[in-house]
Image (cartoon, rainbow, N blue to C red; front, side, top):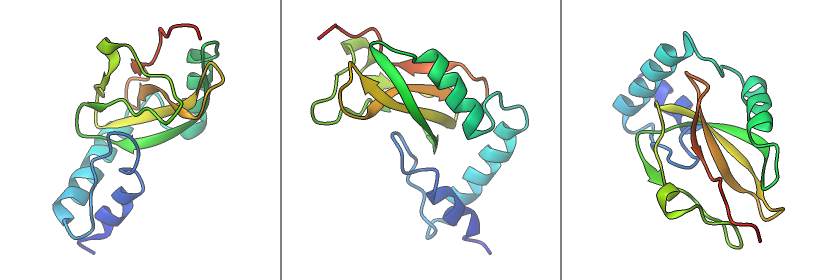
Length: 138
């Protein structure tokens, strides 16, 4: 019973900037559970479909086009991930800084390139916390 929140948290901490909770560290799972309950009470983007709709409007392309979203439990700034052949963000956007502990990572493509993170939407406020744009045309 003590480790159950940690098991649940593992599903949400694998994405970019994920906290990396582990069932062997029950306090991390309980922190996750507290954050989820606290933030979900007034979340603007409380479901995947609402977040995806928002992402598709915000990143309608070109150059960046949203294709999917992933809810990630994050604990602070992290480097913007760049896949092989992907587009690097400008120097001022190399670090992604979440607005709260839960964020919707927006996956898509830039200039029809490989799948990569193109944005981050805040779960609670619905605001864009990070955006890969502007990018140079290729």
